Structure formats: C-alpha cells, structure tokens
Image 1: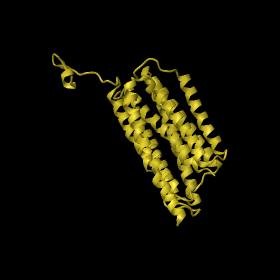
Image 2: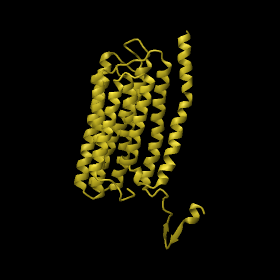
Image 3: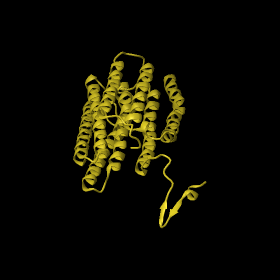
Image 4: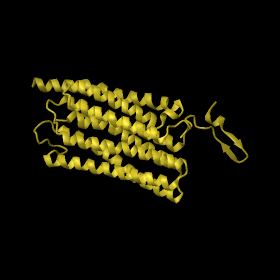
Amino acid sequence: MSQTEMTITVGHDVIMEASPYGIDKKKLGMWIFIVSDACTFGAFLFAYGYMRIGAPVWGTPFGFSSILNGLLMTAVLLSSSLTMLAAVRASQENQKESANKWLGITMLLGSIFAVLHLREWFHLFGEGWRLFSNPTGGAVQFGATFFSVTGLHLTHVVTGVIALAFVARGYIQGRYDQSHIETAGLYWHFVDLVWMFVFPFMYLMNAR
Amino acid sequence: MSSNHELGMSSYVGIGVGLMLIVTVEVILTYQHFAPRTLLFALLCLACLEAYIAIMYLMHVKYERPILYWTIFPATLFVLVFLCYLLPDAFRMFNMRLLK
C-alpha cells in the first residue's frame, strides 16, 4: 500500500502515516545532514591518507606541547558534549533557565576549543608552516591537508556555537522548543565525533 | 528522544571519562615508537570504538528504533570504506618516486 493510500482523512484534517523512524522530522533532517557531512570529512581524511602514502618525506611538526594542547582541546570538546546533554535533559524537563545555562556553557567551551585551535595554528605559522609550504623542505602537502581538515572542523565548531546561540535565543523567546535543542545537540555531538578521528590522524600520526 | 530508557547524567559523565581515557591511551601509544602502519591500525581501531560509543550513547542511537541505525550506518560505512579503493594508487605514486 502506498503512502498516499495510507493517508486517512478525518473531517477536514488529514492524518498522515507516522514516520517509520519514530523521530521528529527536524532530527531526521539532521541525521541526513550528518551522513553527508561524515562523507565529506571521510573524503578529506582519505585525501590526507592518499597524499601521505604517496609522499616520500612527510612533516612531523608536533612536539609534545602540541600533543598536550590537542589533548586539552579533546577534553574541552568532550566536556561540551556532556554540557549539551545536560541542556537537552533540562529542556526535556521544561527547565528553561537550566537549559539556557547549559547551552551557554556549551557555547563557552566551543569558543575555548576554537581559541586553542587557533593557538596551535599560529604556533605552526610561527614555525613557517603554511597552506602550501613546508619549512623543513619535505612534502608541502602536509600544510594543505592539515589546515584544510582542521579548518573544516573549526568551521563546524564556530558554526555550531552560532547555531546554539540562535537556538538558545529562540528557546528563551518561546519560538523554539526542546526538539530544536535536541537537534542542535545532535549536530554538536557529531562535531565531537569528527574530532575523534581528526586528532589521532592529523596530530598523533604527525608527532615528533 | 524516543525512549525513556536513557541513562542518567552520572552515566553520561562516566562515558565522557571513558572516552577521554581512550584518547589518553592513543597518546601513550603514539610515544611507544611503533611502526607507522601498526600505530595507524591501533589509532583507527580506538577511534572507531570512540565513534561507536559516541553514536550509540551521546547521539542516542541506542534508544531510537533500530530502523534508524540500519538505514543510516551500513550505507555510510560502505561509502567511507569504498573510498579506500583508490589507496593502492598512492603506493604506486610512492614507488614511482623512489624509482626516479
């Protein structure tokens, strides 16, 4: 039986068949976005692997201090996932003030992550690494792949912070409900998830 | 959220700590001076474990209907794994440079 045939009309109201996924349409839309974005990051990381295998000499610019910085960035991002979960939980219990407080903390942690990220970038710039140059004379592709992958991730973090600010504002004003916070949370966890691959491949595999 | 079987916040904190421990293990492994191929394999396995935990618990897929999981993940994994069919060409490129 087709979707149209399953449609039932009661008076003037049309009752549609429920989603087989049993989730809100915003959440389903976010899942579809996440799948496409996962493929984008997958392609970027694959390109990095391809260029690294093909290059006879590859740069390893990260000393222990950079790895510690990366570890700190991971801790900050993981903590922000937990505060996001707290915001979702508070919104489900209709505790608006608490939900906004946790959203604020999540945005703050996201901003701290971005600052730490930029600090690492400027440290590399100081050593002479650029998008298309390698100060050690090895493969120039390191800069191209590192700044592309981490830049794309940083863009996602900054976009996420801005999106959370919009959602928090809408939630305070009553335009948005808990499903919006939950959908934004799904995106935020995805950003965290991507970092779980970016950190070992881009940082740890290039440690001195 | 589709279910009432979700974990409490203390359990989520435990999951966060567990994920952080896995990352710490990754850092420790990095300084054990394994061959790059061995290190890559170990890091990839640990990253996949982290991703599985994050998807199932932080993104709540464990508490959604199984159809969501079966619709999304096999196809995505197939695409990501299928990307690797080009990798042998990278080895060819590397060997060509060595012969130069």
